[in-house]
Length: 97
Image 1: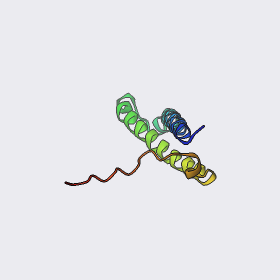
Image 2: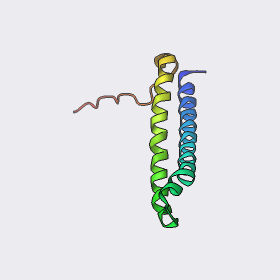
Image 3: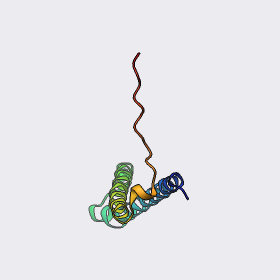
Image 4: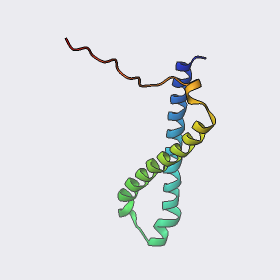
């Protein structure tokens, strides 16, 4: 495989990983809310709409943190310049007439 194929496959794999981590974080925080937070604080059904917003935001924040940690670990093990092509390259300078 060439560098461009490696880059595309890495981006697709990283995207799938990030979505799965976000989903797992959302499910985990939702389970935590149902089993621990709501019963302990006596929250009723009127708090669901606010709780879902915070759970969703927490799942996204958790996925960003996990993604960054895993990406740094992968970058330490893999020589990025050797296997991947840059996504964005410098644009060519525009000549003025």
